[in-house]
Each structure stands twice: as structure tokens, then as C-alpha cells.
Image 1 (cartoon, rainbow, N blue to C red):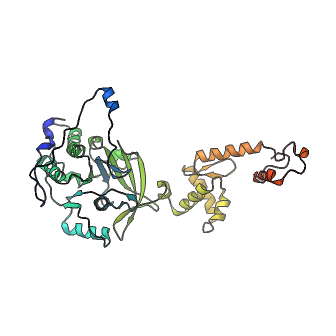
Image 2: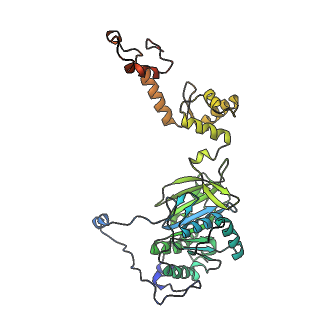
Length: 387
């Protein structure tokens, strides 16, 4: 990437809102870029700053998803939560600080309507700055954002909705990959220089893929230049969406989310994603088997009287075929192979334990307490130790 494509940040001085421009912006030292190996190992670096712990770290994060899936509701909700210092997704505590939200496809009226729903009568945070017009990165957009960041040194996050409105024209004579990489590079320079999270709201391809990274619209240069990629996809069952997350400082994970129609907020659902992407019958069976590993279909049906016994048996078989449950040779079901292996090992060990100690006849009158553990043996073990 040529140095002249992204000018040094200390040259940025274009204001973009009504706040008074300071006489002189706080000067930031240029970060060190080279070490010897021993120097690097001896250097203590601060932990990454999180806008949303575990999900949005400092750096550039792509938030991609199909049209009308709710990306703007999600990003605006996060902006309000971070600016107010509340809870993201109604459950993740976040540290408060100024947030810049570029709503480049919305009108002020629409933004007010959406915020009214999301706030639900609560006071709007003054730390959230909303902008509906901004020049593309190469034509002054980077300068405008940098100027706001200089005026808000405690800023936590910048949201750009949508990224396509900011990328501008591709430089002449570069490949599509390089053009995509350069366009994200403008945002990355800002994120790295100011140590904040920059969220680029983007689209996915029409063609779905098992690898969510390949669904990001454009070349691999977009995801390659970003520090993290988040893809919001529609889901089946109890969840309205699944947020797939991966990145350099973010552990790869999946989160089940539910969209609250009344408030417009995305709510994080408890438990594994698989619990919320399957039908109600499967979810109920899976929940019971997790709490009772080794359960048989009859046990499950007895514990869940609202489910038909034959339906439970058929559903368990289908769930085993789909990899949602695992089954042993005796028809018992487990939530995973590891739990099944542990259960089988325990049964195997018990089967070799005699129910009656060999020296019992020599210990007449011993307290019953010492033999109380014998009642815990499975019914399949008889008095003589044979099955």
C-alpha cells in the first residue's frame, strides 16, 4: 500500500460538527514500529480496549449481513449502549464513552424514531454523535472523523453505516483486491492511531456459504484488512439471528440473538447456539438430556408429558443422525461424545465391582453405614457380582 494513499493522521484538521474547534489538537506520538526480538519480548503492552467485551475490540470490525436482517438496529443499539455505559444486547456490561455514528443511509426523522424505540423512555445519551452526511474516506472523510476524535479523546467507538458510502473511488491501476484492502485501510489507520473500535456495516453476498467469512461482499481484501469480522445471519427456531464472530483479538464464537419487535433491540440468548436454532421439540429434548445424560426416550417422554412418546423416540433418532445427540449401544442418549464416553467408562468400572465384599462374612455386625454405598450400584449388578 503506497504511503501517499493514506496521509499521516497529524495532517487531519477538518471539523465535521457544530462543536468548537480547539486551538490545537492533542499531539499523539507516532507508535513504534520496530524492535529487536529481545526488546519486543521485554515490552509490556496494554490489553486491547473493548467497546463490547468479547465481541468488539479496538481495531476495525466488519459487521456484515443480508439486507433487512437488522444490522442498523443492532449497530445503533450498540452505539446507544456504549455511549451511555449500559448493557450491550441487554446483558453485556460496557464502559461508557463518546461514540460517533455515521448513519449515511438514514434521515434525522428515521433516526429519531428508531432511537425512541430503543431508548424506551430513557434519556438519550449526550455522548452519542449522529451524522447523516460525510465525504468518502479519500475525499476528506478520514480528516472529518479524525477531527471529531481529537475533540473526543475518550471516544470508545465509531460506527460507519454503511461502509460503501465511505470507501470512495478506487485508485487507478490497482486490482480489486488491493482497492478493497486500501478502502478498509483508511478506517484501520484511524482505529490504530486512536485506539478505538471502528465498526464498518457492510453487506454479504447473495450466495450463502458454510464459511461465513466468504459471504462478505467484495474480495477477500475487505475481510483480510479488518481486524475482526462479524456476520449476522437469520436463523431458524427460537433465535432470530446468529452473530458469527472471528478476529485477531476476538475469539471465534457464535451468539444466538433475538430481535425484540417492540423495542427494536437485539437480545443475547443464554446457552449454546444449537439450543436456539432448532425446533421446540428438539430444544426441549436437548435440554433434558444435558441435565440427565444417559436418558432413554421413555425417560425423556415421562419427564416431558407434553411430548408424545413415539415422537420423542423418532426425534431422538433424528437428532443422533444430525449430530445433535449421541447414542450408545443400549439406547441411552447423551449431549455429546465426551459425556457418553464418561458414562460408559463409569458403568464399565462398576460392572467389575462385587456387590458384596469377600470378607463380609468375617465382619459380622459391621455398621450398615459402611455398606450404604452398595445401594448406588445399577440394577443390572446382582448380589453375586454378575449381570
